[in-house]
Amino acid sequence: MDFSFSEQHVAVRDTVRRLCQSEHQRLVMAAEENEVLPREVFARWGELGLLGVR
Image 1 (cartoon, rainbow, N blue to C red):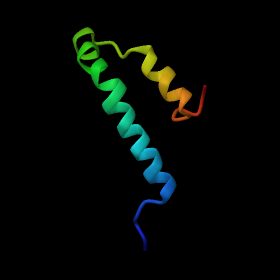
Image 2: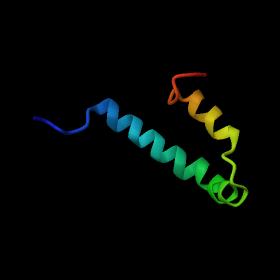
Image 3: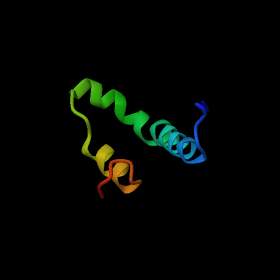
Image 4: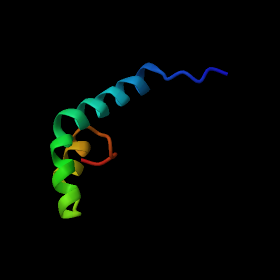
């Protein structure tokens, strides 16, 4: 069996990693302090098609 990722899986993984490092990392501390996940996180993930909704 081949357990390696397909090119599509690698692309999604890399996109999510870049998004989290560049855009969402700054929101983590505020979210932890306020105990609220910012809505813009869901909006951005939706724009990228990561939630299946836009």
